Length: 615
Ligand code: ADP
Image 1 (cartoon, rainbow, N blue to C red):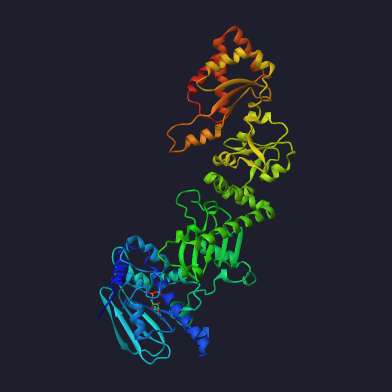
Image 2 (tube, rainbow, N blue to C red):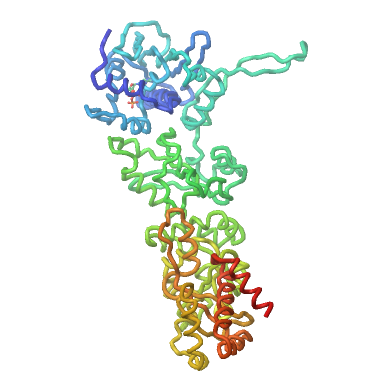
């Protein structure tokens, strides 16, 4: 018995004994090795004119329930006794992973992502037997190990070149049913998931049933089936892809029942060479706006899946994008650095971000109706993206945003809003509320006469425009500020200063200021704000679970000086100041309610209204 090298033993222990949830990847590893061995022989055959073609190569999976064995066989280059000793006696002999003493639990993930290699077989097998014969040699060799201490190598009978790896599966335990790996559907699933795009056929005899017409019953029979589809769709040129193929691929792979609205396929050569195939779903998954949703793209290297959801490939603002990235460059750089810090991944991610942006802009320009549908699902994410990181991505995202136009009664882009402005116009006006209906009824809108107003109805909206701050040199401005900053006090205000000050004093717990306005149409009063914090922002911030110190906007009660109620207030101020204050209090509560701001003492309000009604 030969002993494993020290570091190999350590890795083995780690792999076998850690509770590594993803045991199924052993099959991916063995299939990848088999595929490599086939590649090696294929290139040798090309160089030395051996008369072999790709069609001669295959990988076979065989299962045996009685023996509880699973065998993976290839007719590739095979190994000599020396190769066996060098390759399977030392872990990562050929790889760039440099296993040092400090190998710890946390490294298991890195190993998992980049191929745990041949030894992953011991996650599911109590014994592994490798029978192999090197191409062009006469003798075959067998390598056997139970993974614990060491291994034996001996000569054995083997007719053909290549390698056959037999796993003697561990007994079923409570936590893991290893015999699952002998089930056809399970093997098929794992192969489809990780090794679908291996270039060589992965064959397995599968049981099927057909009707025996004579006996009039169903009988089982076995038939060879190729388990993998072999050519990655993303490596096919656009003209090689058949109609509907992208859509089918998307639906099957990403479990959606509707076609994607956009497909972005690209092949990039440069600092990092990669193929990618991205999809923009037509609707948000049910958990999209929850913390359970995981963004990410599938990452392949040479047709082998190494990560199911590589989140570093997608920025948060495009987290709805699905797809795959395949880059052979990644394998070259598998050192101990983790994927997060991998420079190539960053290069790919930056490239994809630009591609997605360009495609969405094209989508917006060419198919507005569908884009609006898309925006209903994912617009919020784009707005969050524009707002996040103090607007670091606003340049990228602002042209993809839609807002509802008051004048046009439809969604418009910022560009469309600005296009309608005159040169001297300085502002992009907006008004916020909880729904289109409620914003449209805001008294403040009556003040804005000539210009359009963007109606903001989502929590994030106002934060978003605040961070954007301006677009094409036009500044965002709330309609509440439309007149509030006008310096000239009207004659009427001056005349009624005493009353306004009196009301301001009486209502000072709930408003900063009481003033007159003329532009409220049929509305008697309205509530506006001064300063940075708007009513909507106050509502949103205070609704956040973590907000302990409630914020408060500086509220202003505006009274319509053209309204009858103003005359009423005036005469009460002369005859009965208490009643005047009480009426103003009722009006203020109404203004609160119109804005959807919480009213604390509804019962008190009702009493006051009743008192007024019964005078
Ligand atoms: P890696 O594939 O990352 O190099 P492995 O532990 O999976 O590491 O395999 C070690 C080596 O064993 C491989 O590099 C290869 O030389 C050899 N090997 C493994 N499987 C096969 C096979 N099916 N046919 C020929 N050689 C193999």
